[in-house]
Image (cartoon, rainbow, N blue to C red):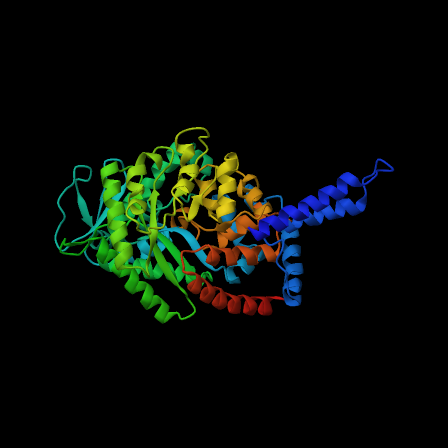
Length: 506
């Protein structure tokens, strides 16, 4: 609040100077012009970050690289990510961002955190892996100690080990399997996905295709560890994972419930931190699909409260997932979502809200409802600019928006990322963090691709090293970690940041 008052005071001072000056000619006073430029620059994310001499040297290099980037005819943020990916990977800025300690990834989904190539090249080559082709030409997988029974939509299973033994070359089969698990395409993206309906149908189908692989107990453990590894290799030190906590099965068909799943997340996280002491950790946000009914939602909230009590170090809170436009609104679930408050129980919410362009609809009220239910952060918040009251409340309460640039573009909310609403939020230093949502589905990995799109696309020439520094720090300050843990994480991050600056400034 003190920072906001200071900002308002500075604006008032500059405007009063502007109003009181006597204009002796038609040319405005250059002092006032410069004061306004500086005032505007100070309001953006990173605008009040004081850079050290070493950081200033690196910033000169960063701005030079960015200027060269923005002169390109094939400017990546103006292109669909599927077309821009290879261009981004050759960018010096992207190379620098890969090395930069980015703090935390606060909006990532469980079974899309890792690139699908690992699933195909590693998991589908394991023993007892069966595959079938559905009547809609999708695929399903199952690990089983015996031949699986036919399903209504899936009549014939094939043991992949036997199928591959008959093939001289596995490449075509592997590529075909991979194509069912990701949205990424080498074809014209707008032809493949002409509408939001089409891309969402394909998106949900991809999750169904990989479901039988990742919910197999041995794979579940390995997948999560490997996913943490991919973020760690991208210099991310902390992850908050949206997880459905699904039923996990063993080779003999026996299954495990949500408490077992959360305990497994806890065990694997502890093992990963033990193996990588400079990784701070991970926490889980339990999610429920917004297509469920009120009874199921209330039951999930009940279970979430119990899990929160039993696993306080790993369980961060609760959220609803799935397409907002076709799913039920937060207000529809108001009774179930009110259960924690009614019982005096603290269950933090991290609601997806505003991932829509259906302005003025019931779904579009999710932003205000999320704030009414005291959400800790807002997932996506793409529609926030059209809700001035929600925007003001979000700023006043310090409720950060989790911005996922590539996701919003691939899911057809925005075409040119320079026009993303978050460009305005960055210019106003609205509380926000950058995350990657479903990198495995989009052909990206970790966090660097999304940082690139935000830094070069949203910020253009206005954002600088201070912007990157504040965004990284935001990802820890707006995390679900306790204040003491946040301080520890920021101390760890600062050491890594200083080392990064020292190694790259010259």
